[in-house]
Image (cartoon, rainbow, N blue to C red; front, side, top):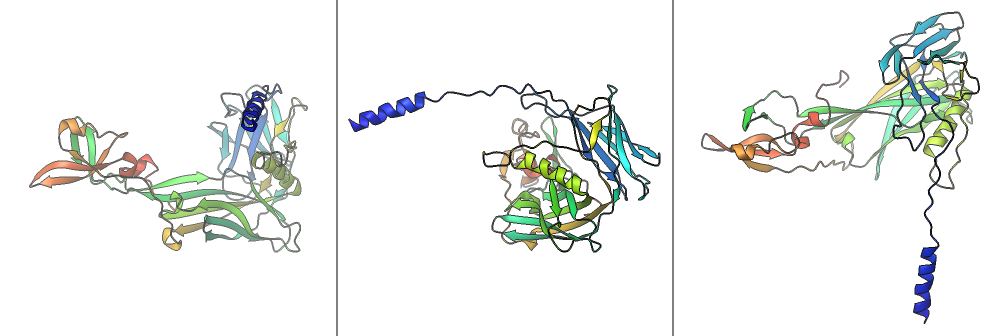
Amino acid sequence: MKRYFFYILIILLAGCKERFDPPALATTTNYLVVEGLINTGQGATNFSLTRTAKLVDSVIFKPEQNASVIVEGDDNSSYPLQENGNGQYTTEQLFTNNNVKYRLHIRTADGKEYASDFVAVKQTPEIDSVSWKQDAKGVELYANTHDPQNNTTYYKWDYEETWEIRSPFPTSYKYVGNGTVIYAPYQNNSICWKYGQSKNIMIGSSAKLQSDVIHESPILFIPLNDEKIDVRYSLLLKQYALDKQAYAFYQVMKKNTESLGSIFDAQPSELSGNIHCLSNPEEPVIGYIQASTVTEKRVFIRNNQLTNWRYTLYCESILVPNRPDSLDYFYPDQLLPYTTKYEGRDIVAYYSSFPQCVDCTLRGSNVKPSYW
């Protein structure tokens, strides 16, 4: 009887569950998003202009194209940026004055105007070091810096990363079609490089400390046995000085984008930046424009500096007979030859493997970086 009652209870509980489909948000989106920094030191100034989209939209990435983007000084100086496509706008070098305040002025293709507040130039201190530590789970990289003048307090970091990859089966042969394999010793496809860049918001503050010192602020974690440190890895850290308002803006953005997922996480907060729509003051604009110098430091990590770091790319050696019907297997999406099997002077077969195991250019670039 108890067992029968238990089964009835399970059926009733299951019957209480109903599918809930939340209605699509009716709130207007398509707001302008401005990302970038007015670089008042050496190097390029880059800005990205995109539009917000609804979660239900099929197209999430919406670049703002054909806009006029100008860096303006309160001394009436101006520096137009060139469009590079996909909402990217850049200029190679700004010739700015540290005693002048700057803003970003945008006119979109539909005639709307946007402008940021004028901001003072911040001087970014040098990066002391990019340190790293290995533990049982992987490698963590950290930023270390300080300002002896105690003028910075608020920091932001971005990075660019590069890592070397190698073909497990370097090849001197190439399939050219029609059942023909040729000897091609100079393909340069055994050593390549892959690239990445930061996606999360990384900020730090020394406001609660007696000295303006940042010690081991986490930048990036690389899981154990990841491909990135199979041979050699490099990270170029870029550091920016922020003012207090910019730091508060990025704090909110970081919480909104990285700390959501359960009822115990921080709830979304409204972003209040320093860029506004001049054509319609009620229209929200997402972004905070800063003007500062940029400091950089590069670090390298070799595989032999780590303990028990073994990346595994699944590869298998397959013997393919040297016959026209068999050589049809040699296509970029099937198999590639990497060496030969002889009987006397005749090639009777080719040792082959999966394309990603033979040709590293299918996974990266074979153009060696200048800093490598």
